[in-house]
Length: 548
Image: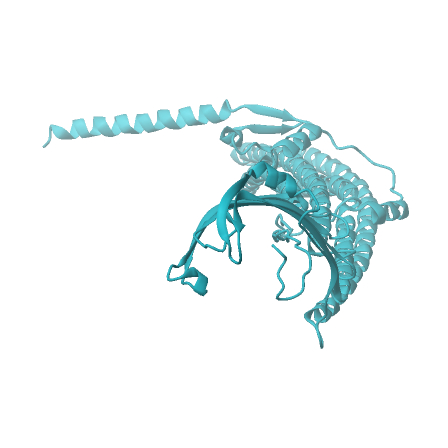
């Protein structure tokens, strides 16, 4: 057991050395991390290219375009076809049939095209059908019987649905919503660019604050060194050394906090500009090389307000919402009208197959047959030999209070709500821009005051330090002068940041409202409802059928 202790100590030492080497390697890797010298324009460009929130809104514009395509599909021609066979055996219902059942076998097909017109809400259809029928009915004149038919039909609403129908309402609204999604993307670009600029200047200020805190710590450490010399020489009581050492500890804590704040600011900027696929960018050190722009001219707030009320993206989107509300009112008012439709159709029929020739009285005796080809039946369908046509009006109107009336009342209220919301947005936009303009003026004046305060605090510190060097001041007074200088420099940094932020905000609010806490990217637009294209078939006397 005694011999194992040196071995255990050696293992523990090796583990400790390994941990130290790993820690040193990690620190070296951090020190060697790539430094990105970043201008403000480059930061904005990176955000526009890589920011995932912008990508979400950009994809929403594509969703809007897809919805427009979906709604336009209601006006696309529809091709339809069918093929089938059927068999029908019925018991004899006529003494001429004897005891045999009647067996009828059909092979048939139908092909057609129909379309809803994008204007007037009319629908048309063209169809072609063929059939081949065999039967054991002795009364049949053809076996097999070949038939072909060609039909054209058209239906046109005259009141309800003529100026606007559900399909056109949906298409118009989908198209406006697409435009609104494009405006929302531009608005998001403005908000993202503003956020990037704010994060950039915040990082710049926090890094400058680290430098100020580091310099303050160095001044406090120098004061400790001087006090230690004086205490050792018996010129100063030990309490002064303790006081200066306590100040060093406080300044070191301030520096740690400043470094943490700077790292948080760097992460905030990285979050806005980094490519999500580039995970290594989190380790990239960002060096914001852009310098503050300096004092800018006082903006013309009234001109900015007038411009914004005509060009702000949120107001433009609200105006699209108002147009959609008006479209809904127009549609629902139209739906209250009687449904009066013009219906017309024409059909030509051709007949062919094997025709029985009969002689004698009814039902006659089959004396022969004559074949009529399918081609002849096909051509006959386009002749006036067997025409079937129709022309008429259909009218329907609900009795009593209809759901359309209630829906119209709701739509009118929603239209008025949208109108009032736009009025509120315009007032809010004007107020926001005026406040942003005043903020530029006030922060510029604050920068001047803070700069003067920092200059005076530095002069006071220099004077107090010289007095301390010749024994005319105390540690307390020097420390207080250092604190005042630190506070003045921090105030100058903060007011400079506020001024740059006010410039960014004033530029942004003229185009889009600022993002507030908790705002998220919102997608808009309802799902497209499928409106099947009806098939017009003309109008015929009830119970009479269509004649075919």
